[in-house]
Length: 331
Image 1 (cartoon, helix red, strand yellow):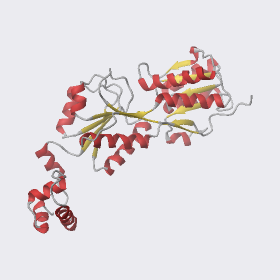
Image 2 (cartoon, helix red, strand yellow):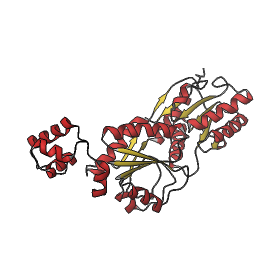
Image 3 (tube, helix red, strand yellow):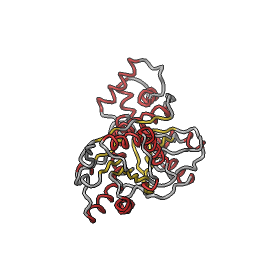
Image 4 (cartoon, helix red, strand yellow):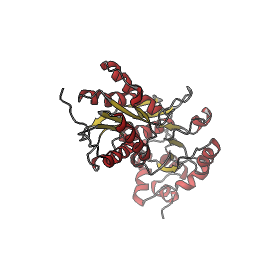
């Protein structure tokens, strides 16, 4: 296996020069020397020993992604997109599944330090108590929108208020007024933002909303099943469900009791999971643009590590993927 000594010998430079070129730690090295070192490394197939380098520098091009679970296909898809963009920028991604358990500062610090991880992407709303110093030291980027007590943090996430607005507008444009809202867990900022957008849309349209048409769900299939039961009793004409996973539960309950979608009740959902093209009917849903969120989160980390960060809070605009679950009502 080729070593750094072999590269230095072939390029006619010192081992130190090879190390600085490959690690991009000295910008005073001439372009000619830089190209000669890179060509020598490529010619003999040299690959740096990242583990050994990490032991020396206490750093690595490694990122940890912390997610609450891998069962929800939303997090699986997000993990896949983040992995892809991390690889494109030369980072290795660890995935830590917290299994919906709270991760305290001590456990987080141990995870980071024992693996020489340089940065973290966190998609878990349970992590709200981290000290600002820990957030800054470990270059944390949050992908879950929550109010972090005005702390100076880095966030890349979907524009949930805009998503709530356009989903509600879509139902109104299709002729619906008696709309049920299947919202997310209490004190969850993304759900609060979506609700805010939905209510704002109704106010802008002149609709007086009945708060009894709000079901407080939890983004799960089981919660959706109970939401379906609730809305069947409320006799709403359409439902805006804040999570695709919950929507599948609603569909199951409606199927059990003979309620047809969209003939009897129309549904627009949120997340635009691939399953929406498989279920019957295919579900119209708000697409958060996960690929763009993943790309921007990795770019933010790269900017953080290279002292190039300009924006600390990025909101990605959503769009609606129209399928079969919302009918047009003729007025």
